[in-house]
Length: 447
Image (cartoon, rainbow, N blue to C red; front, side):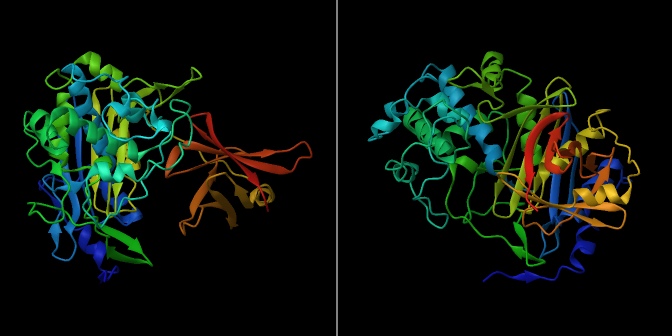
C-alpha cells in the first residue's frame, strides 16, 4: 500500500533545502525553485555546462521526502530514456570496432524472428523506424526477465508499418539493441557499457537500474495523485529502453566526452546526430538515441526520460557548446521545460519576449469552447478579462494571453502561439498551435 504524505507543509519544507553551496541564490536558483513549486516537484538536481565544463551544479528540494534528505549534485536518479543515447553508443562502439554494421538485419542476431521482421535493420532500431510495437506485451514491470524472452512476446504481433516507412517511438527496438550488444560482445550489455563507457569516463555512479542493490545517494521517486504526494510505483524489471541510474555530475562527464574522441569518433557522432531518412526521402528529426531540433535558431540535440517517480532531460546546444542536465524525482515534472528555462538565462534571445495586448471582451467570448486535436482536447474558458487554456483531463488552467486579436501565448511556454482561425462565414473554426511560427497542431472547434 502506498504511503500518503501531507502536502500542505511539504513544499515549504522542500523549498527550504538548497544544497552544495551557501552562496546567495541567483536567477537559476530562483527559476528552478519557482518551477518546483508550480510543478509540485519534490527534488531536482541540475548541471549547467559550457565547453564541457561545469559552471553550475546544484540540488534543490528533497531526494527523500520522508527522511528529509536534500537533493544534491551527487544524488542518484533513474534517468529513463536518456539511457537510449547510451545504449546507442554501445552499438556504435561495436560498429567502430568492425563487429557489426548499421545495415545488418535484426534476424542476424535474434533467433526465431518472424518473416515480417526480416527487413528490420540495426539502423531502424536506433531511429524508431522499425515498425515494431512500442511495448512488448510480455513485459512485466514486477518481474525480472531475459530481454530475449520479452522481445519474443512481440513476435506474433503484426508490424505497425513497413520498416523505414515512418517514425514511431519504440521501446522494443531498444530491448533488441541491448540484446544485440550482449550477443556481439559476449557480455551482459550493462557490463559492456560499464567497461567501454562508464569506467573510462569515471562515471562511477552510473549503473543499471536496480531496486535491491544498495545505492549510495539514491533518490526516491514520487507522484502526485488525488492532490497528494505519493511514493511512486516500483519497477523490479530492468528495461534496456530506460536502463540506467546516474547523477548530473556523471552526465556532465558524458557531455564533456562528446567534445572529444575518447569514446566516439567525430564521424560516428555525426551519424548519431543526423536526422533519420525515411523510405519516401523525407527526414524525421531523430538520430540514434537523440532528438534533433532547434530553438530560436540554436541547434539542439536532446532527449528526455521517464519512469514511475522520475523525469529527466539532457539538452545540448551544439553550436553554443552549452548543455543543461536536469534530473528529478517526480513523475509529473517537466524537465525539458526546466532545462530550456535555465538555458534561456545564459543564451540571450533563446525564449522570445511577448507583449500582452488589450482585447475587447466580446472578441474573447468568440474563442471559448472546446477544440479537438487528434491527441488532445483543448478547453478554452473565460474568467473576467482573460482566457484560460486547459489541455485534456489536466486540472491545470493556464492564462492564455493575447498578443493580437487572434494570436495568444502562455507564460509557461512563450515559444508557442495559439491562433484562432475563422472559416469563410466568419465563425471560429480551429485553434492552431505554432512553435516559433511553424504549425505543429490544429484542433477543430466542436462546441
